[in-house]
Amino acid sequence: MEFPTQFRTLLLFFFFFDMRQGVRGSHELFNESRSVAVELSKVDNRYKPVYHFRPPKNWMNDPNAPMYFNGIYHFLYQYNPRGAVWGNIVWAHAVSVDLVNWKIVEPAIYPTKSFDINGCWSGSATILPGKGPAVLYTGVDSRNRQVQNIVFPMNVSDPYLRRWYKPDYNPVMRPVDGINATSFRDPTTGWKASDGKWRTIVGSKVDRMGTVILYRSDDFIHWKKASRPLHSVMNTGMWECPDLFPVLCRGKRGVDHNRHTTPVNHIDRCVKHVLKVSLDDTRYDYYTVGKYHEDSDEYVPNLNSIDNANGLRYDYGSFYASKSFYDDKKQRRILWSWVNETDLISDDIAKGWAGVQTIPRSVWLAKNGRQVVQWPVEEIESLRGKKTEMKGLKLKQGSRLEVKGVKATQTDVEVVFKVSGLERAEPFDPSWFSDPEKLCAHKGAEVPGKVGPFGLLVLASGNLTEYTAVFFRVFKYRSKYVTLMCSDATRSSLRSELYKRSFGGFVDIDIKKRQQISLRSLIDRSIVESFGAKGRTCITSRVYPTLLSDEKAKVHLFAFNHGSETVKISNLKAWEMRKATIVEDV
Ligand SMILES: *[C@@H]1O[C@H](CO)[C@@H](O)[C@H](O)[C@H]1NC(C)=O
Ligand SMILES: *[C@@H]1O[C@H](CO)[C@@H](O)[C@H](O)[C@H]1NC(C)=O
Ligand SMILES: *[C@@H]1O[C@H](CO)[C@@H](O)[C@H](O)[C@H]1NC(C)=O
Ligand SMILES: *[C@@H]1O[C@H](CO)[C@@H](O)[C@H](O)[C@H]1NC(C)=O
Ligand SMILES: *[C@H]1O[C@@H](CO)[C@H](O)[C@@H](O)[C@@H]1NC(C)=O
Image: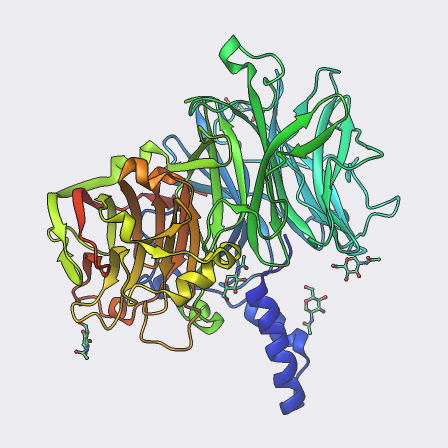
């Protein structure tokens, strides 16, 4: 991907700053702030997550080439080794046996050749049968064109795959035949169709039409552009970081894209596909469920799938440039995503670090086939320490219940709310369907309702001058119900200058039938990752309570209900989370 919005704003800021001051060229400042060396001993850890993946210091963005190979998980990522803002990007590389604790080894890819001298941007890994991994990535060449390159491990027997080499025949895909040379990036994992040819897609745009260009190859090295793209949608702008993968119609098991044409048993014959794109226009990740047709080499979304910035999102909060891989160890598909900082760039420079990855999530198709479901990988539960549990408690209107006994700055909390009085729920206006985020902003945790708002107040001060509210609200619509989930950061910090959005998404469940809804939140200092209704709707927020700037301040976790209908906590479990071990081993 290209440099982040935050940075564009910085550029703009310096541009105007220059106009006013008339002293220095914007590029000088740009260059300076992206290479301000960070001393490890000076890194400010107060807001730094302890069990989410993040390097000890500096800037990180997109996940790259996640894979499982020979017993080791590899996680590579866009990284600035020389500062806490975007710039000087290399592919940093971490390895793990459990997806929780990581060893950071030397960077795998960095600019060295004419085909990547101006940038080594995002890409993906493909395990070539009998040969090992190959990585396709976007290079920015000496003429500032985006091209696609290939690299291989120098020694596939080295368990950590520490060193990689770039063949001289790179680039393997060039921006010719009308491809826009500055909008051509982020190749996906390759897959082989039954004609024996490899495929990959690359994100692009034609004017305002977002598109994924299809390439075919016999040997994974010589690539030929197909005459038609795999998929395009009018007026969606640049498609970054596309991801295409198969999902089984039933069950949580994942499928390898390179095996889906020869299913292992009859149950596996029903396979659908997911195509995700990161829309540069809005900076969020959208997906559709559909079918990749091998004969025509096209992806066709389901008829009822909205295929633009009004469509489904993996996560309705801060979450971008995600990428999945098939984990052969546990036969599951795992999704990673970058979560950016939403404090100020000056804060990031002062902190000495910026960027977090989500807890890796298992992904599968929901039973109704309309969407995917996501759940933190089970390995993360190995960090659960001290536990507290509550059962059968009533939350009357206006009541609040403190979850005590666990450190509220690093917590995994899972709660099941039993609802009642649905027939008295607030009426839903169908015009609200188009913008759940606006609805969350309008009907916040403070606004009393009927069935809800109820949920959690996390990273809260005792007197509630600061808190982040993660909650549900149920509405009545015709003879049915609409369930809204919000993650509201508007009161998360006393600092008024921060980005404090009230994110929201609808939850596709039959609340009348279930009469209950669950919520899991992974709270980790400045990140709150929430999973509604067992992972049907997910929302991630970044928050910077001033409360955390005082190491000794007491941080609280509450359950609450501001609806007139009583809500019951049938079960609440909270665990204090231990730190993950993330060490450099270069
Ligand atoms: C800024 O960095 C770019 C690329 O790294 C370089 O070409 C340019 O000369 C630098 N500008 C200044 C003013 O240092
Ligand atoms: C490749 O890695 C293996 C395992 O670490 C090692 O034994 C072997 O010497 C390496 N080969 C080369 C050529 O470095
Ligand atoms: C190519 O993409 C760039 C970056 O978005 C854009 O500024 C430019 O107008 C595009 N060029 C054409 C010919 O569409
Ligand atoms: C609320 O609590 C915080 C931290 O516990 C404290 O710093 C602040 O002064 C309190 N504010 C009020 C208005 O009581
Ligand atoms: C994350 O930061 C916020 C606040 O600065 C921006 O509005 C988002 O666009 C940004 N997200 C990405 C993916 O860059």
